[in-house]
Length: 164
Image (cartoon, rainbow, N blue to C red; front, side):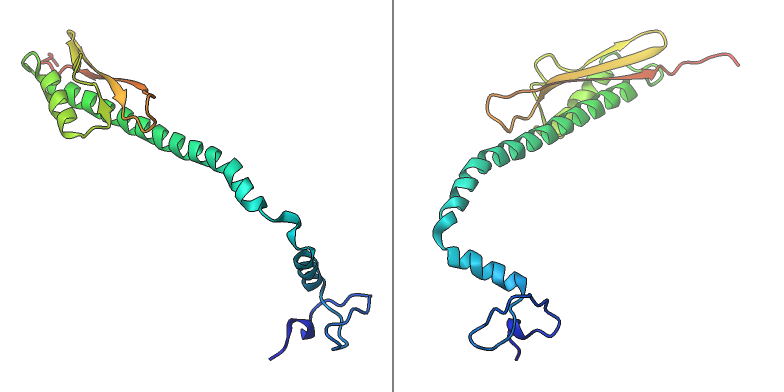
């Protein structure tokens, strides 16, 4: 077995450093590692201090990214509920309140990504040619005390009979 100092393709230095009397030049990388190890305690304890300085920033970024993801899921949930309400309300001769009932059922089954949606409840406004449903609430909070408002609106055309 060959030692690292006897590598045939290792770069040789101009100086005649000896490796335990073997008479071969030591590669520059090995010399650098030996110098660093021989320096000893110049950086002792630096890693825990660096970790203590960097870790709070890493944790803030981690929780912030999870909070942003929860906000996007809450927005998607609210938009899907509003679209579901529009689809129920735009049907030909749909009863009043069909859109709100469908959106409420959707949000009840969707989980807790959108919280506080039931205090005003979903609203659907039906005009002569268009239906608009709006769902409001707050996103699920990962960071205590932080709450992001969510409001999504969907529009659709009312089905009706027309003359050709």
